[in-house]
Length: 441
Image (cartoon, rainbow, N blue to C red; front, side, top):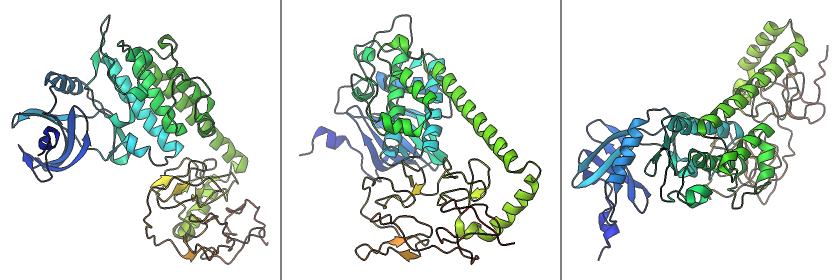
């Protein structure tokens, strides 16, 4: 005999009103969430349907719809429709790709994490502007959409701020603020929860009570972000609500100030470095870069710009061949599905180690090996013999250092130090070992 919960579940291809169920994507004690297709408007949606097996009034879900409908923002999940269908209350929402919790199971670059952090803060700040306290900020309630757009969802526990606000200790235990656990949620409670989410995103660790600094994962955090951003996180997760940001609006103002300051510094360094290289030859250098790209972009995949001089570089380069800066593509968006937390270069999900730096091994995400047309060589270790992509420094399967000198297509020149191929007619430094290139005149 089926239990009440099992009997309550919808099946794939089952229809409910105009919606055709595709699959169940989330399950909770209060509601189930399904991926479905709107057969009239021909679009995929997420359906949130309260479970019949629990004695829950629809008022809570009506409240969620009314709150979410009131908040129109690019980073807040939109409710498309809400109605009773076959005696069920059905909420139709935008369908994302995955939750932030799912994304945090894989490695994420600092640049990407900072972009997502800005969107998360913006969403909560908008809710606070409209006097809405979310009360359940956690990675599972941030949904990722194409082009790395992040949206805040699930306003089921949300409260409208009044002069005195009393509520149950609703929320998720791992991210709940102390005063909220005691039934007194405030704007500062959301700030606390978001601070924990961001701390986990950048450090890889979720702090635990009593939240005394340095917290677990602090060294990883310190290696990835600037001290000013650490202070922002530290202020967000103070135990005393009066010592936190008053709301996410203040938090956003501080984040925007730090972010704009960092951009100005980066631009200033770029301009200064460009002037030091040669103030009067910028046009000539751009012509040089254009010719270099015509000849080597395909073989080197130089789709990124150096973070100092803005010259064309690739993720695999250890140094900028134009100005010599270390890891010139750091902070750029990779085509790879994941990033190494140490050097931030792109890595494939089936790799066991970073192929570009001698970092620690990765948590195994899959036992499947994915083919790649860029694999053109094999690891020299007879026990491994794994496939390699040109200009790898280490085997991503066994961590053995690659000893073969990689040639550069369309160039016969080699670095005098590392013996790897170089574009002698263009480069000032070897992109693989930073040895100055000595041109024969």
